[in-house]
Image 1 (cartoon, rainbow, N blue to C red):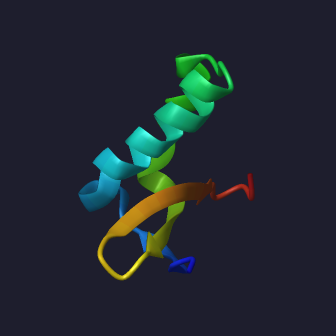
Image 2 (image 1 turned 180 degrees about the vertical axis):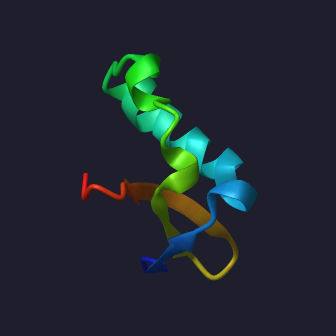
Length: 72
């Protein structure tokens, strides 16, 4: 049976490691995005979310998104 999922706000200062890890895997490695484009210095001022899946035994971060002040 699939686990439950939730999406919640994330704090860049305290959750930067997991946010960076997911984006590194998905965008830099998986989609071959230039790291200079991905790590553009705008993360500290952006709104972040993390998607989590809980299978009853373990809670795992599986996705992330960010929203910049200009709407991007």
